[in-house]
Image 1 (cartoon, rainbow, N blue to C red):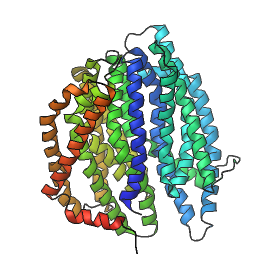
Image 2 (spheres, rainbow, N blue to C red; image 1 turned 30 degrees about the vertical axis):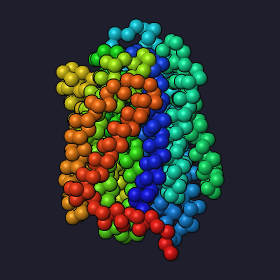
Image 3 (cartoon, rainbow, N blue to C red; image 1 turned 90 degrees about the vertical axis):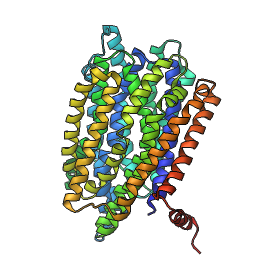
Image 4 (cartoon, rainbow, N blue to C red; image 1 turned 180 degrees about the vertical axis):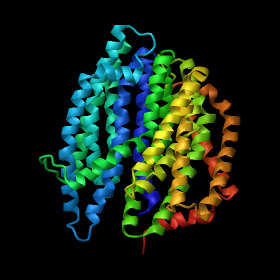
Length: 524
């Protein structure tokens, strides 16, 4: 498999989803602003959004895909039919658990919202009841997106990566349509419509994945739930993988609760908007790499190709650094014009954009770490070790909690994002050290040579952007077309400078470009 091509396919669709997400967030900022209504919706959206990251992009895929591939690749078995039988057994157990969980969360929505928000900061009983109502609207999304992850895991294992990567686009399109068609002059009513649209989007994603599976010859039949040895193995792998893959999401959950309970109204919105911008490169790079690396390394290890698996992980780390280092520098240096251009409309004031840019700078410090977690954890999951990542994720969450408590009051809305970035860095360091200690990873000469040169190229790009971004400031507060034109010029300038700097520093040579071009040509 061509790692760059497969990652590019997934990353391109994820990028489209993230761009639509920015359009959605821009409209949300215009019609709702930054206040209690926006904070209440974002708290209600945090729980299902976390489950999406845990199951659709994390725990379920990490546990299910290696076991599914093992069934399909077993030389003594029937191949794909055995894999689909295992998938039906997993669905039979998963569905009633999800139904029970959904009912319980609906019943106990009040304490769940209390935990997620810390009861906000100085709200009335009526306001808190409104927040609980929004949570009840979004909770069904948990069940729907978890079933989506099962279908998506099957399609990923069959190398139909694009189908699952396209599913989140439906979420953003649904919320955009709801904002454009049903927004109200009352921010509370607009927030209520958005909460309802979240669960509607989950149903649409389920229909899309089920239809795509059927088109690819995959049809699952509902069975009577039975805890077969394979299902027990799956369950044993899911729960530790949930904490391991969801360290960033759980850290964000802690950050959101502390910000809602200790900081002024609007702080949750600043942190959320900053995270959305930070998620753009993370979605393009990290999710694409993680989705491709896990089944690739699993199959290589299953075939006894240890050297190939090591090379795959080295190239994954190299690609992650090549793409995340410039993104990190750009978001730190140019956060202000980016936040102002995307969100500075209507009820979202220039001060709101300024605070969002500050939170973005703090988040972006950890961007390489967020992506490298996606690169390193497949080295454990492909060997069916989900316990080690969960130990390190637990340490990471403790670091995040301590960092939040220490930084949230002196740094306000910048404290939780910075604590999250530091915690993710600790997680990466622990994962890397253990892989090296076990002999499962060693940075090869190519990676060791290129990594510092990529960092130097990214810093050179940052200096140029810092010196020139002031020229575009007058255009950032103009019309939509002018704003996005100014951003396009800023992004293009950064890409050009970074590309030249990688060649000058020796991080990327003309021979590499020639090799890529030769690989793109069809064979004769």
